[in-house]
Image (cartoon, rainbow, N blue to C red):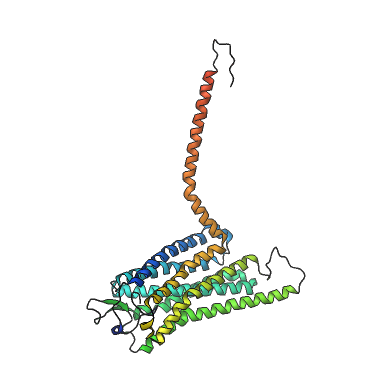
Length: 372
């Protein structure tokens, strides 16, 4: 729970074991770092959403991948505008001031955002598997992806719904009469029930998506390896149309991008979940684990929200072109105004000089010729 030494995702069931949290140096660092990540994630994911939905993207990018990236960016924006501000305010105020209804709602939205992000990566992995292993079925990919995304968001809503009943605003009398936290107190009668609840979410939120993505990309690598062996026995091969493994360059570039996105998900979230599993089975670990480790691992997990638009921009030229166009647009109008002003001034100066020259060349009593 934010603001105290606790497991990364879900709060302990027994409120009497809590210690009064303080807004110490580690919590202050977490607040500042989360605020910085919020700025980076909001800017990057809003730019990604605008680019994917823009005219340039519709013209250059694969139409089947656009809805998938929109879904991933939407989940990241939910993480950005729900989880990060909640974490900043909760750590700064130490205790919960939002009331019972807001506690339930934000706990639900937080888990929904995490489920939506993980399920979007699963759908992307399934799409890349179908695009590379079975490319002849690409005609139905657009509608299939939409159905998978609808199913993914529906499952995310369903799996996050228990948060509305599990969490609530709890008064901790042992800490202070006016001390309130948003926690799972009194929801579980014994500790193993809470551990089972946490392990269920760990499995559906991290372990199962990771297994599905590993199977998809593992099969893709195996298919590419087999294609390499087949092409090695052939004499005719067009390097201008295909890469070394027989996969089109556009699909190979998209595959690289999605693999890196999945790797960033694994790298950023694995330490966070491992610490949570360790705590669920050995609660005493919280007594000797430094507080800054919990804060750092949570920040490292939030870093994944910032990585997705950066990875997409690295592998997508149209995204970089859109950003460059936006930067140029900020300077284009003042420059045009300056150019128009300079042109008008130059025209006035030319007209004035011509008028003076004409005046000086009027006939006079002097026989001297007029040179222009």
